[in-house]
Amino acid sequence: ELGFKVAHFGDDLGTQTGGLFSESNFKKIYLPRLKKLWEVYVDAGIPVMMHSCGNVIDYLPYLIDAGLKILEPTQPCMDLKYLKKEYGKDLIFFGGIDTQHLPFLTAKETRDLVRKTIRILGKGGGYIIAPSQEIMNDVPIENVKAIVETIREERENVLNL
Image 1 (cartoon, helix red, strand yellow):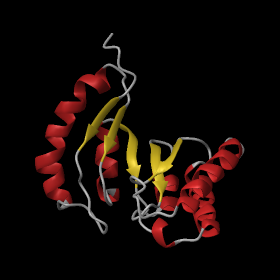
Image 2 (cartoon, helix red, strand yellow; image 1 turned 90 degrees about the vertical axis):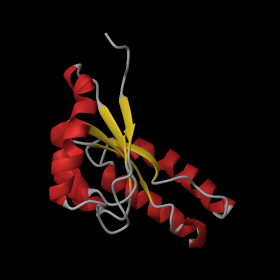
Image 3 (tube, helix red, strand yellow; image 1 turned 135 degrees about the vertical axis):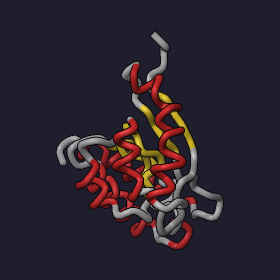
Image 4 (spheres, one colour; image 1 turned 180 degrees about the horizontal axis):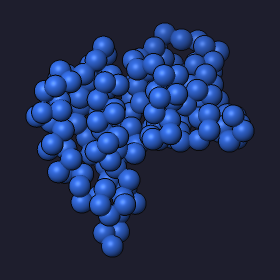
């Protein structure tokens, strides 16, 4: 009825090491407002995608309960294996390919990183292959090519993981 395929919200809730709020303040102050914002989409059966930089792993049970279906970006400061194991049945992961270290990696290391990320998050489906953030201009072009080539190679394999 609303014509939307997905509802996309954004609010950075994390740092490299954890959430910006204590769990109790998140539940008491932030979560009720978030539920109210998402309610119309959840009630209409429209998947909710949320952009939040940083490590939001402590908030995920509450976000999922509120209706979160797609986590964007999935950042490597969270344990990707743990995320997939614990929340892979509830969430689609968008991102995950570490961009923070790309300027310093070789093309081979970049390929290995991309392949590993795809194989972790792609196992069983529920993964949108993408970088964890924008690829900045200090990343060698060889690494950008390595990302694209590896995604092309691996995307066919993801379905068989």
